[in-house]
Every structure is written in C-alpha cells, then in structure tokens.
Length: 209
Image 1 (tube, rainbow, N blue to C red):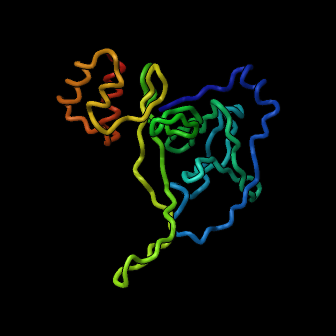
Image 2: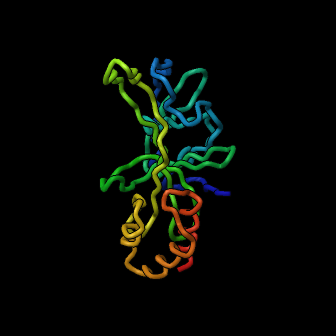
Image 3: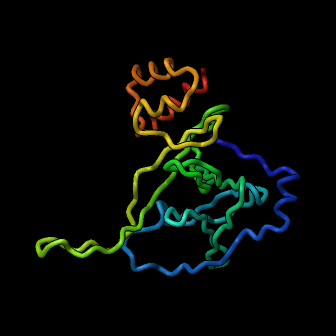
C-alpha cells in the first residue's frame, strides 16, 4: 500500500492562484474504441488540493486527468508534483519529468513501486489509428480506432526517470556500478525486461546493492 502526505505550506502557497480545472466537451466520439483504460469516473485523491477527493478518469490518448463535477466534465490542469491516488486499488499517477525515446517529456506515469532509492514507473498508452483504404479488392479498409498498446516501463535512477531498454546489454549500460552483480541477477532469474513482475524483481534487487 502506498501513502501520500498532505502538501506542505510551501506547496499550498504555490497553489493559491492555481485554476485547477478547465471544462471540456465530453461528447461521445464516432471513433471505435476508447481513450480510457477505465471509462468510469472513480474516486481519487489529488495531492495538491490537500488530498481533496474527486471523481476522476485518465485519458491515455491526451495524457490528461478528467473529473466530473455537477454533471460537467473538466480537465485537471497539469501542475508539477501533481499526484492522483485512486481510492480503490490505490493506483497512483504522478505528473513528472522523464525520458522517452531519448527525448525529455513531462506527463503522467503510474508508480508501480515505492522503494527508497530506485523505483519502477509505467506509461499507459492508447494510440489513435487513422482510417486506411483497403490495399486491394480482397481486403477491408481499416476504420479509424483507438488501440490499447503495451505499457512502457521506466526506472528512476540518480540521473532521472528513463525508459527501460528492451535489450539486456543496453539495460546494463544504465548503471556505472555493480554491472556484474546486476548481470548475474538477470541471468540467474531469467529476467524478461518486458514483464512487469520481473521488472519489480530487478528494481527490488537494485535497492539492496
């Protein structure tokens, strides 16, 4: 279980002029599929609002939090250090800086672990696939739709939060120390760098060395 503390006095002072919500159009799209892994609005605490509870869902296409209030839908305006903790399942999203495809990004990542030194994060991705004509008379056209993709995983190191490479040799390059110990752990436990449970295991190990 994770726990998040109330904002400090300094945090609160920064928020005095924060207009945290912007109303958005919630009309249903004609595009097949969904922009959400969970379409329902679920109760969540917002750290920078003194852990105020809102009914929230995460839009993975736009990388935005949406909340419902008095029958209207709003976008939760992005803010550094913003943390959203869902009440059921205790799923945590953090608005933070990270490196994705070798580029610096800022957005929502799911916190997978909560260790002292090194941590694992995941990016939930839903892609928009545009309409495509049939390549020949024997095949059908591809209708525009939203496609749920695999999570992309990130690791928090001293240099920041970086994407976890798919290849073991590239993963080892992330570390200047203890490469031999890490390599031995990967081999001994047959770690799959695409598997979340395996990644939790390696992150747990990294916190012991």
